[in-house]
Length: 356
Image 1: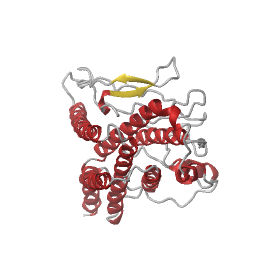
Image 2 (image 1 turned 30 degrees about the vertical axis):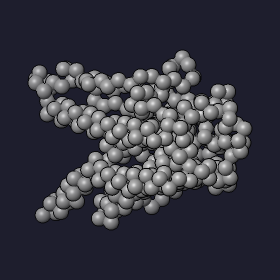
Image 3 (image 1 turned 90 degrees about the horizontal axis):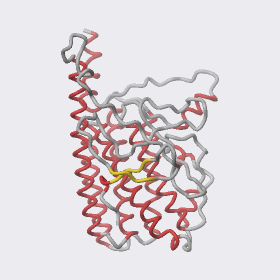
């Protein structure tokens, strides 16, 4: 039932608060493009959750029950003047930037191709079986976070990585996706053996592919996950619009009520890196509210994956509160990190070379 993912992305115009779909077009001159064009705006005046390049905010509007988003500034087109140094010739840094822009385009083009291929398969198999489709989507959606944590744990074992926030946030994301999956199972989405077989075997292949991709290029892996999360957002959004009135007549699954309205919502806040903790507390009265919040969860995942594409740009929402209330300086763990296996190897060899 969901249209091809690359055909549309969601943005909001400055003069309107309604969520609109705009056609996606690839600008060959731009350095990169995003399928989740959200920009972060701090909920308060203090910049306690700032982003270097990107981030976003999503809130539930009680009047029309849509997600409010702000459009990310489009990347600047590389002009001839930008690629030339002071002597009028292309500088070495400009050449390196041009190469990186080309690499980003290739990475994202491959991700779009892979995502569209999977979507076409799902469209052909599940065009009239919504809950089964959602079960497959949620089985697949949590796999990247397993892969990210596996690679990061390996880096930690070698002493290459010491950034706990990434592990905390990725675990919280997997915890959120797991509850989406439990909801779909309670709704009967896993009743067919074929659906379970397909979802589980796609998940195995997806895990291996994502782990290898994350090892080589974390930026590419995060963008691919952004593509998956954006498609999930679009799928749930269309389902809500098409079946909203019927969903309002159906009761909410018990697991959804416990997850969204429970006493311990620490992990629920943890994966929403673009907002302050305790600022989103869903109300679950019926099945419509459940799918509304699942859709908004996918928007939060999309924004976090977009922010992760800038190396070192991710931080746990709760860490800002810890910094604010800790008057005395705490014991700081050295923030060692690297970007891909090649960068890790270079940094591990560099200290040894300096000692000689």
